Image 1 (cartoon, rainbow, N blue to C red):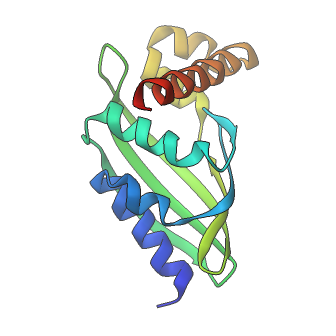
Image 2: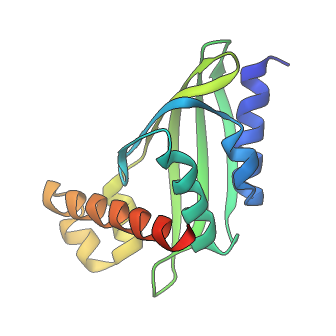
Length: 157
């Protein structure tokens, strides 16, 4: 088993188990991360994001993943996360496609992609259905996510 395969298995197993320290071990110190909700995150924000998401899920997260392609330098993984979101505890089933780059077996770049409109419909109901496809609402979602991350890090410190 190559280092990149071990890293991918460790990452998704650790997310499912809520083990933030094991998640952190998967990333290089200079990792770059992007997804539709958080946008671009810096290397120090990535483990904090996972810590916040796991904390908010109360470790009530179902995760399934499949490695599509992988080699020493890159990987593509399709995964599904099922969790509850927000004050109303709306169930989210998020189908994500992740692309990775590795250096020395660690993740140096992760780009997660999913349908933000479908996600916003599940997360916000009718407002998500009506407006989740708009750049305006997607930007509001991103600003709220980044604000939540910043506030979480203040209280967690």
